[in-house]
Image: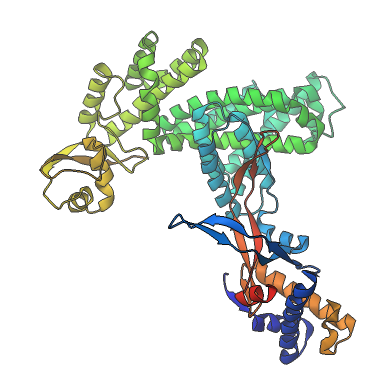
Length: 494
Length: 83
């Protein structure tokens, strides 16, 4: 990698390949390039098959401005040697990225988010250069999804988590038999069993297929679907008429989510709650996409496969969104501050809900679903965020100084609903949460915020917390003698 | 280019060795090595980041994927020669 290859090395390659003597090989390489430059002089164009075309282009003189002095200068016309690589060479070199294609972006897609997403994508690409299907899917998915901000936040994560391809395989196994089981007693079984293990899933899916055979007898047999259902199990292919596939996929989605739901419940109640929200969000998105993709899906089995990938991505999304929400609580806090003051009329609903999770964990989920029916979508989002915040807040309370945070929460709830979790301004996306003021200090002449941070916390990087905590507008201009509040920091929980 | 036979090779030989040379260069470039030829120039592989372009007529925004591109930098000697 990035080694400098000289003429001699190329000659060595020739020796290896053609069995020339080293001297001859070197001579040959040298002559080749000599010839190229010689012919360039005369013909202005030299083409080497498999490598590319060298060309001499005459650049006419032009006016320019010296960047440093701003004075006008004249750049004389000169000859420029250009090299256009042959298609073969180009493709060969570009191999790692070969499956990328230019994609049309929807107008509504915000750019900065896009860029972040792409960064992740490139990483994934470098990690494993298969799965272009997945990448492309996530791209298109992204386009469809762009209207809801929350969704977008989750997606970079989704792409990240796609990397373990084993997981995908497992999921595919699981979901294929499932659509048939929808609203069946078996579904209950599935829910009860701890579904986290592969083996058990396999068992369950076995049961499902049995069940589907039973259903076969009762349902009409639609013979025209084999092509499109080619990926699925044969009995299923006959069961589901083509116009139902989109439906069944959707059911599959919900089913799987239910299963997943159980899984997560075992792990973490809070994350489950978050997942609730995302599932509902995804329902909306899913339906939209269903509409748009119905046609394509019917045409080819590839469309079917693509859709499966899509569904998988969504599933993983809902699964990991739980972690994400906990990973980055400030993101939610920031947005929280906006919708809340607006909800004067509906304000009662959130506050009722905000209390609910503290009292009873189980009821919250129910309440959320109820609310989602009653209120328009964005309102719901706001409300959910609220409950989520409470959930997180509660967790931190349980983990650390329980009473303190709880009390502060109460205060925040009653007095100033728009304030953030701990009542202090937070550094967005930072590792630590500002939970109070540790002590105050007076800035000495010659001290900087960074040096104070270095002294107090052991690193200059903590200056940002001081800046935020004191509401300093211009960190580069702080006067000596000013009294600084040094924030008490607490590690942010996952 | 077949005039490379001023070395005293037959045309066939020249073609075959030349293709071997091209293959070798390609291989080196695929490994992202820099090929530097004295008095001629440098071949190097550059990574182009992806970017968003706008079609001026349709105002359509496109995302151009990242790619690896071979870049050739002529040496000053060659430049001088071309004047």
